[in-house]
Length: 69
Image (cartoon, rainbow, N blue to C red; front, side):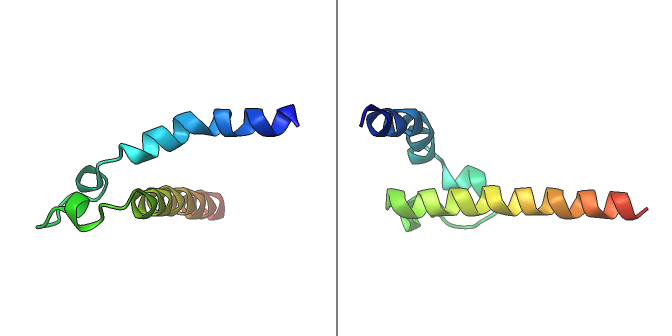
């Protein structure tokens, strides 16, 4: 029972960081205010995770190309 109580506390700093993400910084070059377009913190969290996943996938693919050479 105590373990369940500890796990949410471990995740809280990451969730706080995601809430403060600036979408305009995360996706530069847009002609409109993304923070205003996506005010919901759940949507911001999703977009942040998508950006991280895309970066991780690109790194993985790049590592595959290096091994082929």
